[in-house]
Image (cartoon, rainbow over all chains, first blue to last red; front, side, top):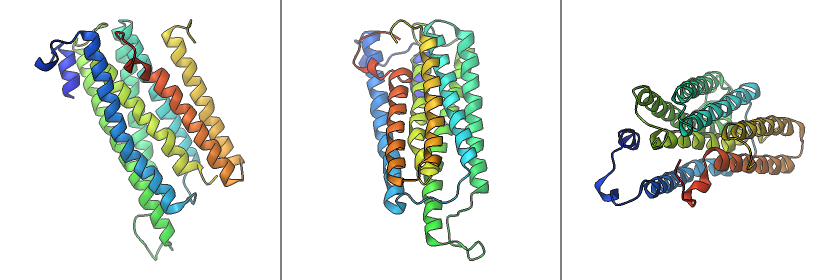
Length: 207
Length: 68
């Protein structure tokens, strides 16, 4: 958030004042990629724990819903790309509309995950009423943890997109200086990358 | 895709990703061998990540000096 605010106003920290804008931008990019790397370790550990605990076993999940929310997230990446490219070309109006589209698609994705949770046929604890078996609960734990952590990132991404949208609407950012928008959109694409691995691991691996 | 405009390039990548997602789904429900399915899904996921990281996240900009 601080990054968005600082760049929206064209403010630079004292320690970086000797850097050229190009170098500053490059440092920002590398820093953001290091952040993605650290996040990948968390997501990767959950991803491997899914196969360590269950192999390729999978409980029944709604395949159609899984495919739909995956396509929604992919579509949100397209609108996010449009917003960033529009800013690079100085088209603020298109960037605003594309950001708004990304926000709406992000909300639809989060609601879809919430709906999937509400109809899931597995849980987090054994229940004799529902004739659950231990493996059912293990899958429930893995499924809710993986999709929950991912959904938390989606929700925080939507929050950052809303902030970027508000700042853009108030006249911040320009064709030459829009790292706040670029970094937020890169974060959004990272959330998409995580789902590229999580979707087949949770929905498709058992066929 | 060096001669294409930025918008066209992004939309072409999006179409490729959408086709890969549909094929991934059809592959998963159509293949009976667990090993083949796992390998196919892994390869598809890695290919999709390449497209997103390169064309959408512009990872090459980390080592290439340029403005936005």
